[in-house]
Length: 344
Figure 1 (cartoon, one colour):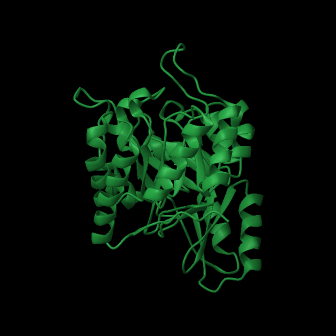
Figure 2 (cartoon, rainbow, N blue to C red):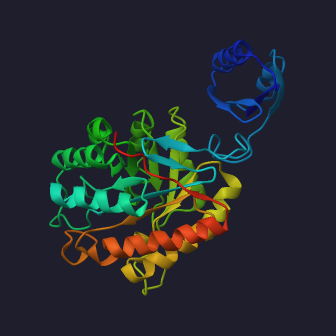
């Protein structure tokens, strides 16, 4: 349920209600809105619990949360959430662009990529140090050395780092280097991993599983939010259908639908969502037109010789052209493409 505080409720009244919620055996999530503070009380729904909370000083109303996903719902927080970390700002009218190679392959490759995507307007650098691959014989990533190279690229360009964490044992290691922890599609329902990244103190980019419903995606986000981490970015990366003309099907109706039911920012992944370089620019622009808060794109200095996903990666010139196209769409909608922070 939601404890809606009065417009001028004091910090002491809010703190008192948090204590009262927790004393009732519920979990309290304090959400500060533009006009009011609300406390999401997660747990028991008995009427006597509601009545007990309604009597608190500074309480305006206590209402049930109808959605199965509680903290992610717009019932709890009508205003859009904006996630900020380093050079990346995403959500609430600011478009973030995360770009870079699928895999970190070498220092020269990742720093060149970082410099090129920043020059074209990207606001964060992506790159896989740990790579989940369908085949155990495929390139699995440079692991901690790859994380070190990503950190070197951040030092050289000022770009925030977005990289995937694959297991609970790796969370602390990846969090030492990354600015945003990415949960890949294969791990969307790895609930122990979701809890672990929720407690890591870093924003999380959560990709939709290829067969997951919207409710399942939002309930996966709820695991992270339930650990007290409000900085979750949802990612539509395409789903499996009977179509074969693309690697996956990128359903852009996801974007406006999610905007109606959750306050969390939403990005799309046209690289994985199509699997073909030639389709990425148009689907990136279409994502912005559909209301996405940002993009995550694969960009490589030499896609033909990339160690993974070269067939869906943009080269530097293609990425620059894609950014120009997306910028025109954003400007037509009155939105702002976030600018990367310059190196100090």
